[in-house]
Image (cartoon, rainbow, N blue to C red; front, top):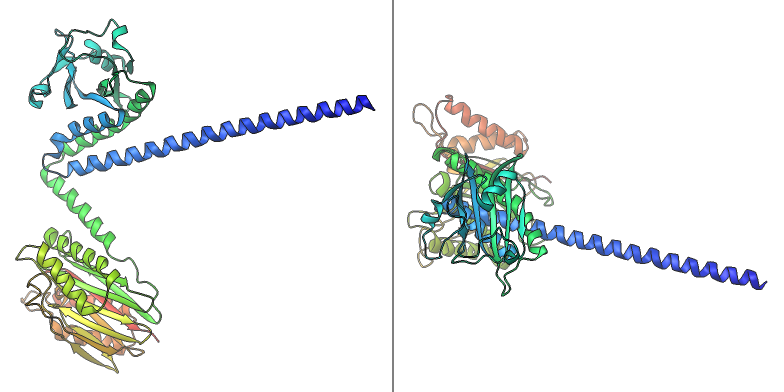
Length: 474
C-alpha cells in the first residue's frame, strides 16, 4: 500500500512539473509572438509615416531635388544617427544624392574626406568615386552590409578626420537583384557614439524604404511635364470621384438618383447627401465658377465646409450664411460657387429649399410643374452684410418629384449655337414624370434629349453637368 501511494505521489509531482513546464513554454511563446506583432505593427507605422512624408515632399516646390535629402534626414531620425548619406550608382561611379549632417566621404585617392556642415550641398553632391574603392565602394561591389560597432577597434577605418568616425553602418540598395546605390550612417547621436544592435536592425529595415523612394524619384523625374500634369489630374479626378456619394442612403419613402459628368478632367460641380438627424436629410448641388482644377478646389472646400457645419446645424438659412462667410474669407475675389439645397423632413413629408445664385428647382406635383426661385446670392461673392438668402417650404406629397441641376445642362449648345434651355428641360422632366418613369430613367431620358439636341459629337460639352432627382415613392 505504501509503495502504491509513493508511486502515485511521484506520478502526480511529475505531472505537475510537466504542466508547469508546458505553461512556461506557452507563456514564452505568447510573449515572443506579442513582441513580434508589436514589432511588425511598429514597422508598418514607420513605413506608412515614411511614405506619407515622402509623397508630401514630392508635391512641394523642388520636391524631387530635395526628396533624398529628406529621406536621409528621416532615416537619421529613426535610427538615431548623427549623419546619413545616400549614394546612387551611375555606371561605375557612386554619387551622393542625399545627405544629412557632417559626413566623411570615401574616394579613391583620399580615403576619407570630411565635409563640414558649413559646406554647401552642391559641393557635396559633386563628390564621386569608383565601385570597389574605399568602404562605400566595396559595399557596392560585393553587395554585403557592414556594421562597425566600435571604429576604434577596426583598423580599416581612418581616424584622422575633422569628423571622427566612432561607429558605422552601411548597406547596399538593391532593386530586382541589382545594386543601385549605398546608404551609410555615421555615429550614434548619444554621448557614447556607438551604434547598438537594435539600431543596426532598424537601419537594415529602413533600407527597403530608401530603395522604394529611390525608384519612385527615378520614375517621377523621367516623366515629362505633361505626363506629370496628366498624372496629377488623374489623381485629382480619382479624389473628386471619391468625394461624391456612390449611393443614396435609405431614407423612408424618398428615393434619390444623381448624375454628374465633367467638361474637363475634373469638375466644378458636386452633389452630396448629409444626414442632419434621424428625421432630416440635406441634399445639395453645387456649381463652382469656372472649370477644371480651380473650380474643383472650390468644390472640395465647399463640401468640407458643409459637412463640418452640419454638426451645429440650426436652420438652412444660417447654414448658407456660414458657408458664405467661410468662402468669402478663403477664396479669391473672382471665385464663387452657386448652390441649391433641399432639406427633407421625412416625419413631416416636407422639403425646405434654398438657393445661392443657382438654377431654379423644378417640382412635379399633381401632374404639373412648378418652378421655384427663392432669392439668394452666390456663395463667396459678397460679405455677410450684403448677402441675402430666402427659403421656401412645401409639402412633398406621394408621387411628387423634385429636380436639382447645374446650368451645364440647360446651357448646352448645338451647332446653331442655340441653347437647350430651361423650357426644354422643364418639358422633358414633366413628360417623363407623367409617364410614371422612375428617377433613374428620367435622368437617362433627359441626357438623351440633350445629346439629341446637340446632334453632333464633335461639339464639346460646354460645362460640367449635374442632376439630382428626389421622388416621394409612396
